[in-house]
Length: 116
Image (cartoon, rainbow, N blue to C red):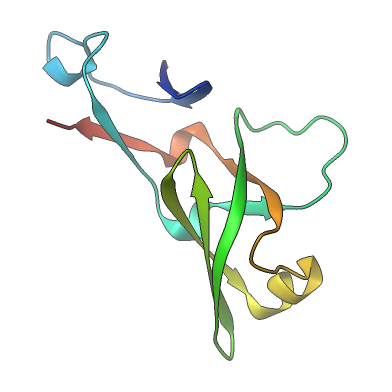
């Protein structure tokens, strides 16, 4: 398990490689964090403890409504994060552009690669 710092937010990522086998894992090297948009869980007004290490605050920028699914684009530290929700989930959350939301991504769902 490694920690990757983005601005002031720490992401936990499970990796099998080491700095010896993957040079981009050396401290101070820029990396890309990748995850599927279906792996992002969105919540509003969360209270209590949730057993997911990667919890980030985002602001909804746009919503694309489909018959079955919604694509939600959010801003996190000037980076765009996308999530796919069922239409039922999106309506239940009553999401609107500008809403502040909590996003959750399990450490096992994030992959990491080098970035130059």
